[in-house]
Amino acid sequence: MHIFVGSHNPVKINSVVGAVSETWPDAIVEGFDVPSGINEQPMGDQETKQGAMNRAQATLYDGLAKYEVDGFEFDPEEVLGVGLEGGVFEDPEGQMWSTVWAVVVDKNGLMEFANGARFKVPDIVAEQIRAGGEMGPIISSVVGESDVRKKQGMIGITTKGFVDRTEEYQALAKLAIGLWYGRDWLKDYNYKE
Image (tube, rainbow, N blue to C red; front, side, top):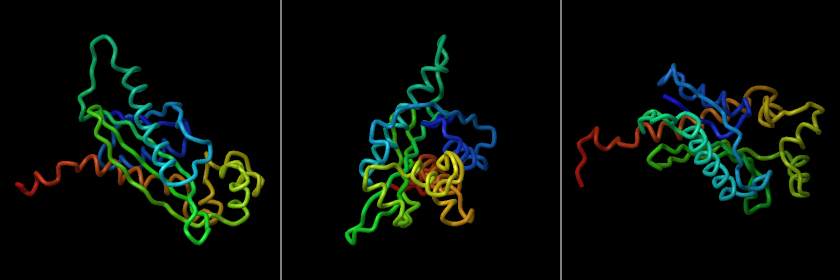
């Protein structure tokens, strides 16, 4: 199994490695630096979801282009593109929340989606995002650490390490990949329409 991840961020790559380790312990997971096609700080679920879709499709394309040469072709059951995108949205009460989308796409174009990891963004960060900032650099500045988004993330800072960004993304990556893996579940029950 080859799984291409739409980022070089070690958090995203390691989250996919962890997500598939039980089912495919020998899977090759490789990151590709692909554009999200959206704003640096995604605002709203739709933009965040679109960024994950764009990353999944672009990384699958780049991965296939890298490996499918000289007549070699992946079996559609043995290659996936995964896009992970974090963003924020505001609820009707005006509170800002973090959100993450995971999208998986296979060689046949089938996509599966998962969303979650929602938690309230601290006011000190939310105010700066509303002013045009981006979550990762903002939280890095607030706590005086570099590149927090490539380490524990804001969730790791605000939970004092109880949950880190890799764990946060791993659960959603596993859910999206699991939905792809189980996509034919009705056949297991001999369901007929």
